[in-house]
Image (cartoon, rainbow, N blue to C red; front, side, top):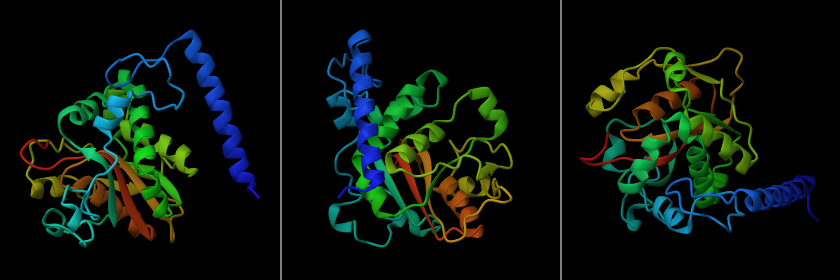
Length: 260
């Protein structure tokens, strides 16, 4: 017999599909990534089949600690050379794909206020491709990497927040946007060495007073992970506040000479 939550989810999905189908009759949707027509878009992804496959490969063999691309045989290793020095404070990283080619362009576009639909589409693709992996972690809540208030005011959007909201709806988890905040406006990480990146974000985050995280399993969301410095620093603060596990979910994992 179906539980009440399963019944509510089923009804909600049917309502969303009906609403989407009706809207599509009046305004045929386009792929949020490439702009191709989507006359049969009823799955709420708003990405064409080609973009779904290119931007979100069904399989992504990676290091379970930092999400770096590895051979399938190395997936069971407790870590790789990229995350052992220095060790990351996140327990595991779930990645949609590599930060290169089309996915790199999409992640950069997601930082613009005019591309919030694209950010939401990528969040849905992450939930579709890696949903089972994320659910297996048994998270209790979702927390996006915050942006410093002045930068947020200037940019007018924060793509990790949009992705986190989508993941929260997909996984039926609460999204806590205000649990974590930035204490200072750190310089951009691009162009810094790995050591400088970790130093740059040291002490940059704080957990707001009154936040209850004791024993919580947190899903920390960001758009891109390179050295892991930002997610690691944020995870350290969440664990100091009582979190039992911090898993990072990111759209892209950067590594190699083309990383920023």
